[in-house]
Amino acid sequence: MPQLDTVIRSRRVVTPDGTAPAAVGLRGGRIAAVAPPGARLPAREEVDLGEAALLPGLVDPDVVVQAPGRPLRECYLRTAADAVRGGVTAVAVAPSPVGPPLTGEAGLQEHQSAAAGVLLHVALLGAVTDRSTPADLAELRSAGAAGFHCSLSDGGAPGGGPIGDAPLRKAMMEVAAMEAPLLVHAEDAGELDPAPPGGPAPAPAARPARAERRGLERVIAAARVAGTRTHVSPFTAAECAAVLGAARAIGVALSAHTCPHYLCLPVEAVPEGSPAFRCRPPLRSGANRDALWSALLSDADCPIRTIGSGHRPGTGVAAIGWTLPALWTAARRRGLDLAAVARWTSANPAELLGLADKGRIAPGAEADLVAFAPEAAQTVPGDDPGPYAGHTLTGRVERTWVGGRSVFPAPAAAPRARAAEHGGPLPASP
Image (cartoon, rainbow, N blue to C red):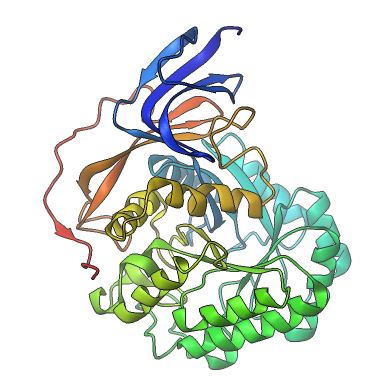
């Protein structure tokens, strides 16, 4: 075998076949070999992770990078830096409530230029609105959109507003013909009493679970006719899991996405008026959190296929750097292993977005990797803008590679301090 660029050894390498000791050889930005741990693999660099696990880099399928009032380039740079710190190596950027809109080729190209050269892979989701034409969608796809995104309520493209049933069906037919996925924010606008922009976290009573149920019914009716690969994002109301399952049972190509904060933080733990919890849909009760986990673990064909940050800086939760530790903290309490976490955060979202070379540790795949210490405790700084501020999480990202290149910690950065502060744990789960 020709000399490798890097060999990474770990006693816990998470591959599609399971978790086991291995040596992973990298060359030219890809994984060239997955060999037994003691294999002799000539390389310019050797990295021994010891007990730290090696996972595929996270693929986050529904991220907004823009914060109101900040330049687009700055937003991409900041989001990328936060993402790789948390082991996220690829993101799909959704349309934001602030511009430029992803409704046509010009907006898409502006985002592509702003994202050029950032630390991770960026895919873009074109916006579908009431005014989108077949030509608009075809233009977006030919210009490089990895998929499409629409909303039945708020949070869509600038000036887009909620999409109606007839435009949704028409758009779904166009998207299905392109063999692209469609992500849908499925809260029904008619069931909501949204808080003013920039206000406190929306109360569950203002955005009730029935809004998700009504929205799901509309999405299912349209997808059943159009045959579109449809991904509900985010999904929070556990009582609607049976609705998702029933749709899949009759052949609707429907799946769903949820976020660590819905799996970790019940609404009872939200400080009143805190701006760090402005997620839409809102956090729900502890009972809903537990039921969401029950649905997620019910069977191998659970329609909740992906888990990602739900990152919305300035207009919602900003937590992309804590996805893996937060999810792992909750998952290990339920006896889950790192392989399950990697399926939800890497393999399944890569499959959804058509990123065939990402989301797995296997020969030929891109060398997007994360070294993760699953037993290490860390406390989220109290001034962190996200919902985990002050909480103690289990698991710490030690290193991140994108295309075989080490991007975190920064090569010139001093070694990080290992002493963890002491803070409050996440709310305990039964």
